[in-house]
Every structure is written in structure tokens, then in C-alpha cells.
Image 1 (cartoon, rainbow, N blue to C red):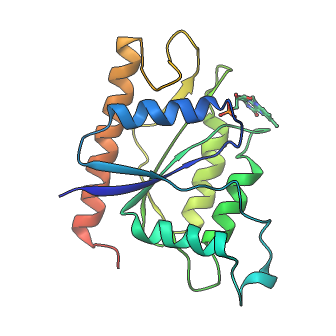
Image 2: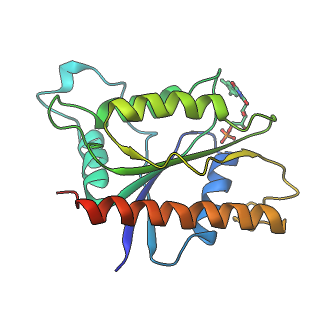
Length: 188
Ligand code: FNR
């Protein structure tokens, strides 16, 4: 069996350190996880006016989540919360009312910052949002990554053994979480 993981990179930056982190995570993940990025950069700003007629980008977003067995958020911290682009994508996916794409989905989150706190506050904010969206979040282990270019190569190679081990363990735990949630009750 393989598990399809849709992942969100919370940054729209062309030089995003969180995108680099996502590449590292994919490299270090168990081989039965298959990763597909779910893009958020081309979505209009959500309005309930769209509920009766979602635009193509938003339908594609919801379809991508529906195809995923689980979702992974790799996000920066913006002003002690999550970037607006990511919140906008979550708002789109959670609607129209009664068609919340995240209902019961296994989920995990991780993020990198250049500062010491490693997106801890953003992740707390994201946990509250995803709790309301009724996702099944992995609550441990947590992962707050301080990004340094010495450790993370652009293509996702991790040059520090203990960091690689930590990230590999995080992804192994995520796999266990996904299997556990889906074993109790598959989505559908
Ligand atoms: C930041 N940054 C930041 N860092 C942090 O640790 N806590 C924060 O609250 C913020 N706030 C914040 C707001 C805005 C608008 C920007 C542009 C940046 C710095 C942030 O960690 C840094 O820019 C990272 O490089 C962002 O991740 P990506 O976009 O490179 O993946």
C-alpha cells in the first residue's frame, strides 16, 4: 500500500526556505508515502459569493485534497501567525458549508524560520484553525526548524546528521499517524 500525501507550502516566495524544507522532508520520508504539492498561489481571495460557483482554481484545490489520504503543512510564520495565502487556501477548502475538504483528514505541520522559535507560534495558530476544520492532527512529535543554509541544500539534501535523523523520525511518525487514523476509519 502507498499513501498519497498532499502538501502545502505556506510561502509564495521564490526563495522559500519552507519549500527547501519540504524537499528535505520528501527525501527523508518513508518510501510508501507519495507526495504531491497542492498549490495555493493562484487562488483568488475567498468570498462566500463564490459558494454557488467555485472558480476552477478552487475546484482543483478541493479535488487535490479529496485525492489525498493525508495533508502536510510546511509553513513559515508571518507576524506570529500563518501567512494570509495559506489561510485563504484553507478557507476555500473548508467551504461551501457542509463540504469541508479537511473533515477527518490526517494532518501534520512543520515549518522553518530564520529565527530561533522555528514557527512555533504560527503552528499553534494553524492547530486552532485545523481543529475547527476537524482534521486529525498529529500532535507529537512537534517540529520547529531553525533554517541555516549550511544545513539545508537547495535541492533538499540535509548536511547535518542529527537534523536529518530528526526530520526522518518526524516523517516516520507522520506515516504511523496516517495509518492509525485511516485504519480506524478510512476517509470516504
Ligand atoms: C516574517 N518572518 C517571521 N519570522 C518569525 O520567526 N516570526 C514571525 O512572526 C515572522 N513574521 C514575518 C512576517 C512577514 C510578512 C515576513 C515576510 C517574514 C521571517 C520569516 O521567518 C522569513 O522571512 C522566512 O524566510 C519565511 O519563510 P519562507 O517564505 O522563506 O519559506
